[in-house]
Amino acid sequence: MTEDSPILEAVDVDKSYGDVPVLDEVSVSISAGDVTALIGPNGSGKTTLLRALAGLHEPTAGEIRYLGPETARPIGYLPQHPAFRPGFTVRETLTFYASLVGDDEDAAMELLKRVGLEAAADRQVEALSGGMTRLLGVAQATVGDPPVVVLDEPGSGLDPGMSVHIYDVAADLADAGTAVLLSSHDLALVERGVDQVVLLDQGEIVQTGSPAAIRDALEADSLLEAYEASVTGEAGTVRVRGESA
Amino acid sequence: MNGETGTGTATPTETEHETGVGERATPSQSHVLETIVRRELQTVRRTRTFLLLGFALTVVLLGVAWVGGGVRGGYVPTAVDLLTPLELLVPIVAVAFGYRAVLADERRGELDVLRTYPVSSWQVVGGAYLGRAAGLVTAVAFPLVVVALAVALTGTEEVRIYATHAGADSPILFARVVVLTILFALVVLAVAIAISAVASTTRSALALAVVALVVVLVGADLAIVYGLASGFVGDSSLVYTLALSPISAYRGLVLETAVVVASGTGPRTAAPIASLLGLFLWAGVSLAVATVAVRRS
Image 1: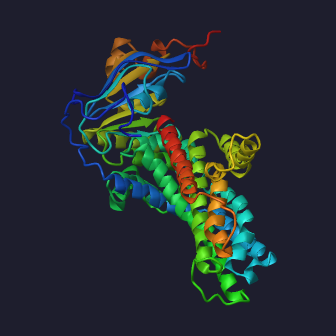
Image 2 (image 1 turned 180 degrees about the vertical axis):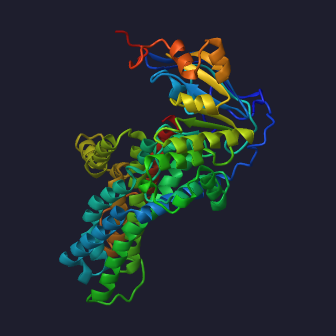
Image 3 (image 1 turned 135 degrees about the vertical axis):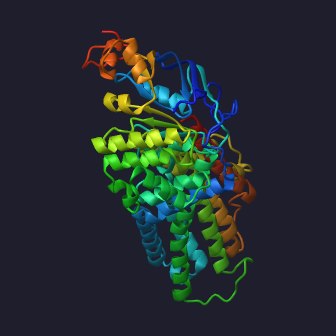
């Protein structure tokens, strides 16, 4: 699926919140036609990096470069905790977003079908389950056919079948030429469903490459094993940057 | 919002990339604004609290006009009866319409999502303001129209003169009060939208709303009184200084254009142009503050 030419780049990106460093000279390239997974322990800076790449906050240093075509919506984004304005149906909500890029209700319904949510089109968004809300969020992230789609933990809260479906949707998007960047803790799905992996630990990239390449480099039998060999913290302990015990 | 981020952040098309996706035209700014306004209008229409506020305002204003006897006295006596309740209640209703308008989207993370669309900060603020304004205008104008109908139906003296000259009661004078009240409400709504954009939590928005109400309802007038007492504000410049306070500007405009003109004589209560400028300044600065706050959030 890889087209190799980067469509989105982070170059030597630092990000700090006050005195607390979160990202440290992070450089990464995202290619069109790839599903790229950002993995790492809690607090490693995944969401911060995703938000920087999506253009939602300024890096403290370094540069984010979007190299794709000029379009109404260059980068689609699914937040970690998607939420929608209450009092509206799923159809109305997605039609609102579609209208912002010049699309209509029919285009919105096509996106709902893609994520398997068309049966809930007339349900109020506040009546959706957590998983259904996330599916609506994924549909929203693809409104306007953005060349880059950034999904922050798209499988969180979904049942296994639906998680697989989300990764299938991501793969379909990549097949159509979209660069899909997602974060995840589900390493089995990542190993199975993505083209590239970026492993982040304590704000630094410690591994990049295909799941197979990372496994081979660390002589691991699985991505989980490679992950455990790469991260510095103890399992079950959240490492907090800027804090020392 | 999209395209407003600075150095170091994603910007479109540094080099052309061949891909099968994207490459669609950005919709016009008016279309985007209209889309946001339409959603705000739907929100207002579906929020029962706003309906209740309009109903409660109708009951209170009708009750005050009836108990005060203004209804039977004519349009101008009714306007005089209603002036103080309007000064108190309209800001409260306006703040209720606007103090969470932007904040709620921010708290849900929807502003972040909107940043990935071709939506500017001013469109977010303008859309929220215009949509809420439509609901607020209805909530404020409807009770006053009901009161005007009550005057028309129960007034003991039939009004035959639809004129604005001195010494005559007229529905046109009451219509001026309605228009000025709507203008006052829209100014306070702009302040409320600014609060909703600046605040980071519902609690802080409520606290800021209370502070804003105190400033608008009491603080600005007290400052002018203090200025007058201390000699900082001279007698000749008082009507211009009153234009700086939204509530004084509104009160002065109502008295000057609807009450004094009907009585035919009286002291000068406002400098109309200065008062209108003062109100527009409050609204403009508030919306500018809201736009900057949304851009920086």
